[in-house]
Every structure is written in C-alpha cells, then in structure tokens.
Length: 243
Length: 250
Image (cartoon, rainbow over all chains, first blue to last red; front, side, top):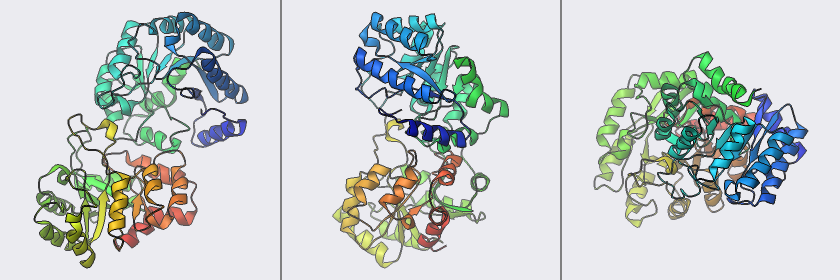
C-alpha cells in the first residue's frame, strides 16, 4: 500500500479485488516510503499504517511486518513482537535493506521461527541489476531458506526470478515462490510447476501497482489441473498464513 | 472477436515457450476470443536477413486465414528496396521494423529514402520498440528498448508517416504523445493498474490497438486487461478490433 492510504482507497482496492474473486490480501505496507534504509521510527510508521488498513477491513487485509534487518537484533525483535504479537500481523516482509545472505538476517529468522510466521523476501535476478548489497538474487533467498529450514520463506516475483531462480528454489521444502511482479511472461509459471510443483507457488497481485485482472489471468491462462490452480490461488496461502 | 496486432510465430531462444504451429497459435488465440491476428516471424528478429523468415511465415499461415502475415524489413540492409517491395506484395501491405535488434536508429538520415519509399508506396509501418523486458533479457544480449526520445525524433522527422509502434509503456507514451500525434500504439506493455484508462487520457482511443504479445506473454492476461478496463464500450470495441481493422484496412 502506498503511504497515506485512505480508508476509501483501501475499500476501493478491496472492492476491485473482490470483484475479481480475491477475498483476502496480504498487506505489505509502503516498504519504500523512507527509502531502502528506514530508521526504527520509520519502520514503525510503515507498520502502523498497515495495521490501520487492517483495522479498516479486517476480513480482507492481513498485515505483514516490514523490517530493516540492519537495525539490529533488538530493533528487529521489538518490532516483530509489537506487530505479530500485538497487532496480529501474520508475516514479515523484507524489501531491499540488505542481501538475504547477510548475518543481519539471523535475528529476523529467529523472530520468524519464534512467532511461527513466514518471511516474504523481495527477490529479483541480479543478472542485469548491479545492486546486490541491497537486493537479493534467487540464489540468496534460496540460501536463506536452506539455512533456516524451520521458517517458511516466500520468494517474491516469479518473473523477476526467472528460470534460473526457479531452479534455485527447487528442492527447498520451506520455500515458495509468488507470481507477482513483471509482465505476464509466458512459460515461466509452467516451468515453476514442472520443477517446484504447485505446492511451492502462491499467487501474488502486486496491487496497487499492477492490474489484478492481468495477474490473475497469468494463473487462469496457464494450463494446469484444477487442484494445482486451487493450491496456487488460495490453498498454499491458507496453509502458510494459518487461515 | 478481437483483432490482435502484436503476435509472433516461431521459437525464441531466450525463453521456454513451446513453438506453436500456425494452427495451434490460431487455436490459442481463438480460445481467448481473438479472431484475427497480425503475426510477425520471430526468427527474423535475430536473423542477418529477414527474407527467409518472412517466406517461412507466409508459407506457414497460408492455410490459416486467422493469421495475417506481417513481414519484417531491415532498412539498414542494402537490399531494403527489395524487402519493401516484397512487404508491399503481402496481404497487409505492411512491414515490421525492429530497430534495436537490427542496429539502426529510426531517426537516422540514412533511412530517409526508405521511409519516403514506404510513404509513397503506401506500405504501413509497424515498429517494435520492445520485445522483452530489459531486466530479463539474456545476459549476453545487450539490446534495450527503443528509447522514447528516438521514437519522438523519428516521428518529428517524418511527420507524414503514421506508424503503429508496439511495446511502448505508459511512461514512454507520456514522453512522446505531447509532441507527436502521428502514431498509434498497442496495449501489450501497458500493464499497470487501470493503465488503459490512463492511456486514453494520453492519446485518443482511436490510436490504440489491442496487442497480446503472444507467445511471449500469457494471451489471457492481455485479453483480461481489456475486459477489465474502465473504458466506454465504444472505446473498448475500437481498441479491441476497430482500430486494427482501420489501420490495416482489413
């Protein structure tokens, strides 16, 4: 959600999504509102806005706690406890404050394990992008998941991860890939189904950036069984989010 | 039924999309409500001479009336006149250009004769500004999209032309449209939320053509975007087919 989201805007997003059949949405907050390195108070501002949106439409939005892992263990633990323990958030969202292999991720993963929540890591192939100190390549996110087998990791952006990213995720039981991000490129979801299986793919809309009709059609326009489609569109998310 | 102005036939080495036969491609399009499509040969994009790929395309679609062949011309090659003549003899009387893959700038003075010949010969021009998302291209392929600045310079240099420019994004159109009205574009890379509604505020609906970018993109996604758009019925019908019928005189 963008900073300053009004109740009316949140209701509009929810209504549009519902008209396409999307009834629950993970709300990630405006994670880049203060740039790549938000301070501890700025992280709280982001999460307070997420909580506010969740309170407006509790039957629709599920909050994820934004963090800056480089703020250190105490700050991370404090914010996760506040958001997951106090505000009812059901996951942790990591953007581009650091690379997923960095030691600062250890407290984040310990917090996720302690509270039993998934970690959604922004991920994009770094083949053509040179900012790996801030961004995470699929091999970084897959390494994170392997190091912390008791934490469910969601690797964001299937299209951005690409074919190589799918192969990085292969065989990592506690890792799922989401379908958000990028243009609706053909064949990559088929490839993910072949190599990861439907149990390891979840639908992501990238709302309000992208058009829900397009992102949903990526799933419904790709050949797969009804069972596979159900897992991707809601079954896996229901399991991961304990809904 | 929709008319799709942005379709390719043939395999692409940098993704794993299964190669469609012409009949299978037509069937895929038909399943998604697309009755006719303007189809270019993928093989011509990377070929040193587009001629063989064009001839293969014409042969492949000869018995598939839903697919209308759009040959590729490389105006930077010495034989451009011969290529243009071949394109003029096709059913669409049109030629498709890939400036970024064929190593020329649209606004270059050395192409003036080519564009003058296309104009005088009444050959419609379709320009591909982008085939792939730059962020995902094969690491060894240093091809980026045709810059909006170059497109604008081209349109300014040839004001009597009215090309169809495929693959532009909303920011590109916002950069080009204020200075130039002599172009149409397609919907394939117009992807953000409510972007079609935003697009018709930038350029009139009569200059927007539906393009799914099949098989690079999931066909149903492009169709869903149009169906979900908050356009008037008249605008949606024009974008969905009326404009293509007029542009290509179908």
